[in-house]
Image (cartoon, rainbow, N blue to C red; front, side):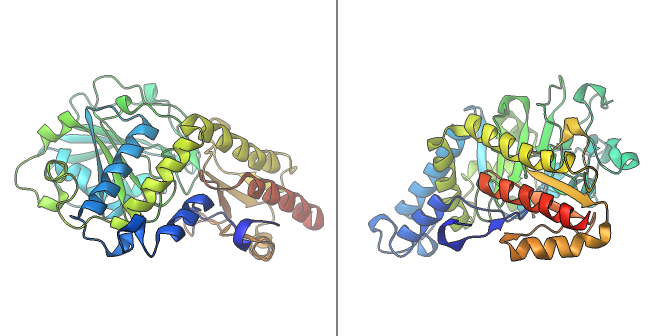
Amino acid sequence: MGQPYDRVFNFSAGPGVMPVEVLEQAREEILNWQGAGMSVMEMSHRGKAFMKIAEEAEAAFRQLAGVPDSYKVLFLQGGASLQFSMVPMNFLTAGGTADYAVTGEWGKKAVKPGKLGGKINVVYDAKETNYDRAPAYGDLHLTPGADYFHFTLNETIQGVDYMAEPDIKGATVVCDMSSNILSRPFDVSKYDLIYAGAQKNCGPAGATIVIIKGSMLERVPEGLPPMLDFKVQAENGWMLNTPPCWSVYMCGLVFKHWTKNGGLVEAAKRNEAKAKVMYDAIDGSGGFYEGHAVKPNRSRMNIPFRLSKEDLTDSFVAEAAKNGMVELKGHRSVGGCRASLYNAFPPEGATALAQFMSDFARRNG
Ligand code: PMP
């Protein structure tokens, strides 16, 4: 198979595969980071060395993603899941309404933030078609004067992607971009708040990246618990407490790595090509494999598929693993299989899986 360090093809939906070069640099620096005499894991987060790491990570992210100066970038904790609660705590007013579009499992979770003063209003729910599509933004009936509109750009479990930038005038746009952030260029100015867990396209689990328009901070009410208050977090340069230091350091290396490799334009081309190999394998199987999402919403990151002979799923997954292709079992909530092809996933892995799929179908068809 010839992967460096005998690495397998890791189709995990997250934590996901990391660029080998980044892991090599981390190995290089693990015992003594650039002459500091210690690893990044052992440093004071208030010390000079880590301050430099943190500043560089943030700057590298801003450069790679093209974040305008009017936006703050924060590396918080609690995962994207905490954002499901933190967003309404900060922006859903007492007696107000927040509109949500639900296109899959994570959107369903986002509409259950806990008991709050305002109302969560589901403006779109793809339940009827078993979460296989996303709406056109223009077709959404948003509530006039709503506090914000929330959507999940890419549903990791159903593999459903809007495949377009939101162009919604007059609404505050909040986006869960956990599973496709940095997979293609995106225009930050179309959003008021973006959040994403690091563990798919950015780095190891631990950090949750938040991009928030500066003017949003003026809307944060008084008296929130400081750790859950975007304004307090921003005012303290996301160093209110010990940040997820290792994750931030690794994310910084990943951001620089992608900038060096052509930025998001090239990332998008590579992702498009890898996904095409997979979708061609599904579409060309004569119905042996079936994809989940409708074609215009097919995710380039997460590709769920089913075997028409469902009882063969376990042996498909087991045989693939024996051949060095792991983590292909679908999420427990939908079953079947899922191949996640994040930025760092090697193209040869997509080709290898497509070949295996065709071979498996021939033997079991
Ligand atoms: N949103 C999306 C789209 C996700 O894919 C995930 C994680 N798979 C989450 C939210 C939850 O993220 P976390 O585990 O970081 O809380």
